[in-house]
Image (cartoon, rainbow, N blue to C red):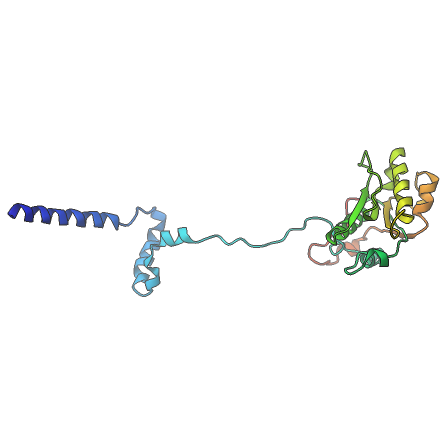
Length: 241
C-alpha cells in the first residue's frame, strides 16, 4: 500500500514537471527582452495582452495596399497643352456611350515631330475602344506581315505611316478602302499618324491623298513653360513618338 502511495506521488510530481515544461516560456532573442518586460508590466492592466508578444507579432498579417499602377497610355493621362483640339476630338470619338453607327467615319490624321505624343494617343484610342469591347486593327512599321482587313473591326489605326514599306503601304491602302467603303455594315474610322503633313509623306499617291482628306491635326511639343506646369497625377507630357 505504501509502495502504491509512493508511486502515485511520484507520478503526480512527474506530471507536474511535464506541465511546467509545456508552459515554459520559449527562448527569446535579446532584442525582444525589453518588449517582454513591457508585456509583463502591461498584462495585469490589459488582460487581452496575455498572449506572448512574439506570438502576437507572428499572428499579425501584413496588409497589402491596393496601389494601382499605370498599365499603358490613356487619353486621361495625356497632358495636351497646345494640342487640346486633337485630344478633344479623340475623346469625343471614343466617348462612353458612343456607338459605331453614330460615330463619324471621317478619317483622322495626326502629325508632328518625334516626342509630340502621336503614338501615345493612338495607343490610348486603341485601348479605349478595346475596353468598350470593340475590335481594332493596328498597323505600324514593326508589323512585317499585316493581316487582312477584318469586318469585325470598329476602327483601323495606322501608326508611323512615314516609315511604311511598299508592302505595308499596300496593306494600309487596302485597310483604308475597306474601312471607308466596307462590303458590310457602316463605315469604320481610320486613325493614322506620321511625322509629316499628308502632302509631304513619302507614300504612294492613293494612300497619301486619302490620309489627308479628313481631319488633320498637327501636334506640337510642349514648350518650357508648359513643361513646368502641374498636370494631373500620372499625366504624360509626351510619348516616345
